[in-house]
Length: 203
Image 1 (cartoon, helix red, strand yellow):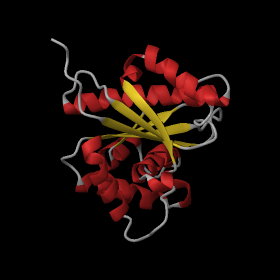
Image 2 (spheres, helix red, strand yellow; image 1 turned 90 degrees about the vertical axis):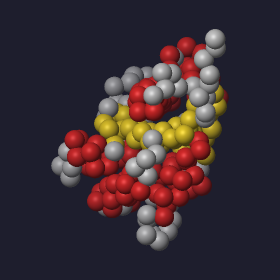
Image 3 (cartoon, rainbow, N blue to C red; image 1 turned 45 degrees about the vertical axis):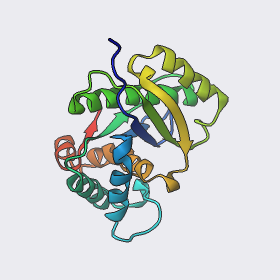
Image 4 (tube, rainbow, N blue to C red; image 1 turned 180 degrees about the vertical axis):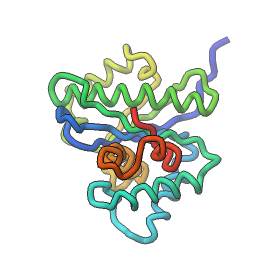
């Protein structure tokens, strides 16, 4: 009997730093499509009327961590994976490093989502990226199409879109997740507390 396809899963990814630099990293937020509106509304609502788009580089670390903690606390019964992936070990040109980092982040993040939800394999995945100068190029799209055919768990990705983060609260949340390793590196919080309190794992 053919395995039933799981309901749609959304993976939101934003980056911190520039592909090719030693501090380049990605932040991923994974959530079921049916829960995405709830999680995004909670995240925006907990900003306490700050208004505007959430950018970790323009906010105090404690403010960012409070947002992540409180969003997680408000939705403790909703399966969400938040993962920070260092992409500095990848080689090649900037666009290639970025693409390889995206593929790695999706593969690990969806594996973890499958573990917490009991899914043996995760398919029907929509990948949503923060629009930038790289992910709108034909070369990047070609790399993603190739990865969808050959790269293990990335083959579960059925659609890829690049959006303006101003219109996507969970891309803004992914921005905070992408920045999270910098708080660890600055001595503001250790990796264990970051995971326990904010739900952000460092890879």
